[in-house]
Image 1: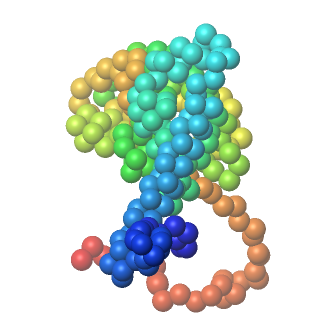
Image 2: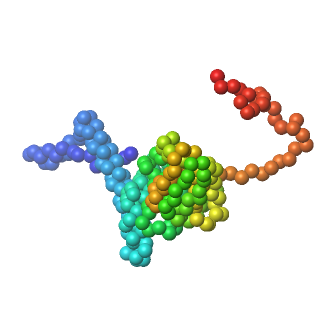
Image 3: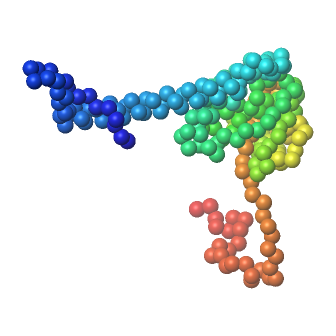
Length: 246
């Protein structure tokens, strides 16, 4: 980093005006101050960019009444408020978590239910909520709606997984875990829940029933071979518990 301006001492006497060069300590202090000023400037620029992006994206004057209500009632969606969500998404990009931010278009039929929520910035799964009341009897399964319709980007899938608290405390889990939602799917997201517990379980509209994880996927290109011997050898033999548990 170059420093263009360094404080000189001005000496005025009978011989005229002179600029005295800085001492080593003064030069070191000037460098340190310049560095601090540089980093504060960069920080200020970053915050301004985030603020401008948030304002442009989330605070447009032209929005329908439905969009405004949806924005207002989803104060806990994603990472908190809608504006905080975008700020933290931008910060996640800055700190190297570019892969953690995947834009997904979503439509909800329930304006009074928040979108899937990440509890904190380190969460991999976002909690999803039921769109209606239902009782699941012991030993039975049910298809529970969420009112969510999404457009998953190509190259990604959404996995539906159980919530550990419901599984442990109530015996309630996702029957086909992890449920797979392909990028080509456009219908309502529904969760297949099964009650492994001994008592009826009441689900109310808005209850968190599962979590969704957005995952990158790859597709294979098969290369047929003539026999099993054409596959590269492996030291592993057998499966289905052949290695034991100890």
